[in-house]
Image 1 (spheres, rainbow, N blue to C red):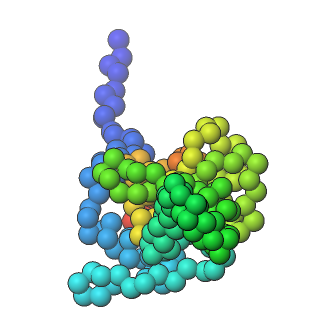
Image 2: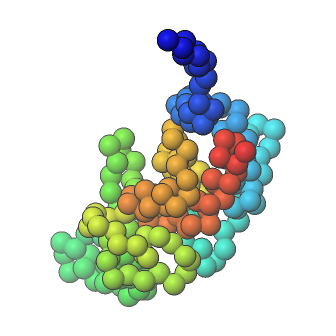
Length: 207
């Protein structure tokens, strides 16, 4: 009988790359993450960092769905006041009516948003889910796909947008199309362009 030649056991280079990518996603390099954050925040909102790592104030377009941290907190404070003014006496009811007539934007905001207390005691802004909503401000998957669940969606701001996208992107380094759909299940106001930007700047995905 003819002896069968021994074939060396060579690891598949594609499998090796996938394994390395998964390992990097599980144990990301903190220095690379911070470099990625600075690059993203600069390109998205013109944010710079001083020698102590303190960021400058972000620049956000007036038509943007993204809120600054200050605007996010102001919206929470406004809705808290709108909904929690006392109305036990005629004087209190008159004061509440006067406030609401002066701040009529509250009727719209209260219909669109609500405030929720998180498990750590902080207040979070939620977008009330509206299946028929057609957003005209920015191209955003939340309003163009068929969001199957009827839960209200979390609202993002400039201070947490990078970490929100990162939390979904890692550890598997999900590509932009799937990443957009995953984010849209939980978050209201993260436009496609920022998700695409994040993936393109990722130290692993952008290689």
